[in-house]
Image (cartoon, rainbow, N blue to C red; front, side):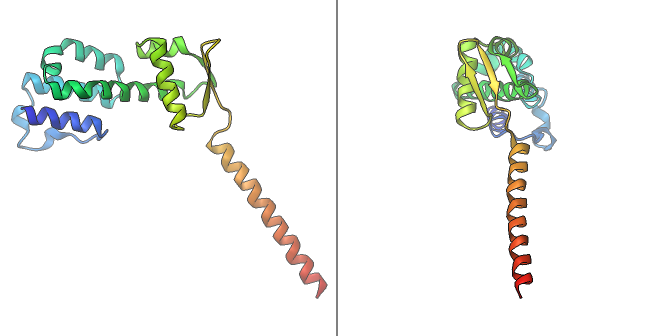
Length: 172
């Protein structure tokens, strides 16, 4: 049972979606209360349901958190799920208030700012944090804009090449 719990933890940390309960060796343990708690945690994690994830952690505190190995990685799982939900939450906005994000993630504003800073530094989002107004301002330039700029440069180079070739042909 302990190994199965670690396997579920490993699947969450590696962000794999594989269903470990398809294997016949594992099926008999699927209904074990400790495994059920870990499986529910994994399902909430895979669906990015942060509130459900935290509720499962609270309800199954003893079953999950009593293991020191798992307890070490719970903070990493919480950071991962919060980061995923954060990116999904801010995606449709050009500006969003940090308190709104904090409410969505159910964590204090300084923790949200720390997550935002790490996302910005890791270049996972292009944004600025306005700490005076408690606002995240997304940068308007995105991948599509960069593609169009590259295409414009390519078109200009082709035009210059075309002009050079025409001029050389007309000289001869």
